[in-house]
Structure formats: structure tokens, C-alpha cells
Image 1 (cartoon, helix red, strand yellow):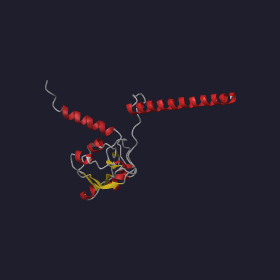
Image 2 (cartoon, one colour; image 1 turned 90 degrees about the vertical axis):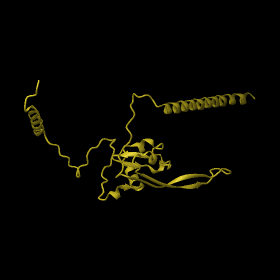
Image 3 (cartoon, one colour; image 1 turned 180 degrees about the vertical axis):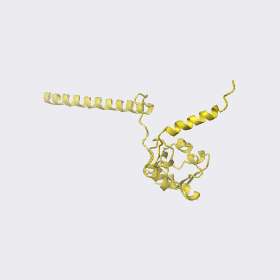
Image 4 (cartoon, helix red, strand yellow; image 1 turned 90 degrees about the horizontal axis):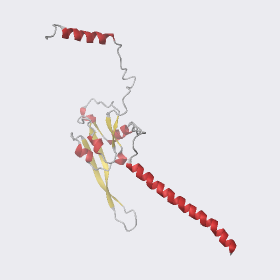
Length: 196
């Protein structure tokens, strides 16, 4: 069966008429901030205290837009007779958002939870060279990162928490048993002293 001539045009006009009769929605953006979903991929925030300068984020970035500089410092021995240790100290952590494709690989591979998605999106610049944001700016964005969603109340308890709770319960039971024995001995000792 061949289509009726002009049926495509009629369908298009029907869509246009339906759209014209709907109420328009105007975003009053600069005055009213949009209501973004909590896990919006805006920019990347840096929690500097967790960064160990392992360089995984920079190595895994497909765009090579993360720049990290560091130096080593010697940490004195914690105990007398111990040896000194060296640790990396972060000097520079910058992300070039003109190159970033917001894939989130850097956040996924970070083993120390130093990088997070922030819903901030107002970071436009007039010069593309100013889209390289240093660690101070990344740190400011860290405080806009939303809290993680609550766990499902019907989900299975994580193994780590179950193991920690089990060992804490054992420790509490051992302490209670020890206190009961100590109380029993305290009750028996006055009787023995009175007999002597």
C-alpha cells in the first residue's frame, strides 16, 4: 500500500498544533538556579587530604587533561630506632576543562576517594586558557558535592560492616564475661576474708 500523498505533512502539522497548545515553560536561569539532579556531572572537585599523588587519575585520563606535580619529603621515624620514610607531597593538581570530556574515569580509578563530581556548572571563561583550574578552585568545588545517596534499607549488609560488627560483638561479650568474673570474685573474696 502506498502512503497517501501529503500524509507526512499532515502528521508534522498535527505535532506542531499539539505543541502550540501546550503551556510554555520558561527557565529564569540567572535569577533562579535550576533544580539539578543530585548526581549531575558538572565539574570535578578535589579532596586534597585524600590525594596520595599516586598519579592513577592522570595516567588513566584518555584526554590527558590532569596535571600533577609533587615532591618527596622525608618523614622522621615514628619510634626511636625506626627508619625515616619518604612521602609524596602535592604541589600542583590542575584539570584542563577545555580538554575534559567528563567521562569520570579519573573519579572511578581514584583508590583514595580524592575526586568527586560536583553539580557546579557555572565556570565559563572568556579565554580558553583560563579553563585550566588549579587545586584551590577544585577544592572550592569539593564543598558543593552532594552527600552520597542513602543505602537501600532492604539491601544486604556490606561484608566489611558485618565483619566489623561480629568482631565488636565478640569483644563486647569477652569484656562482659571478664566483668562478670571480676564481680563474682569480688563477691567471693569478702566471704573468704570473713572466714579467716
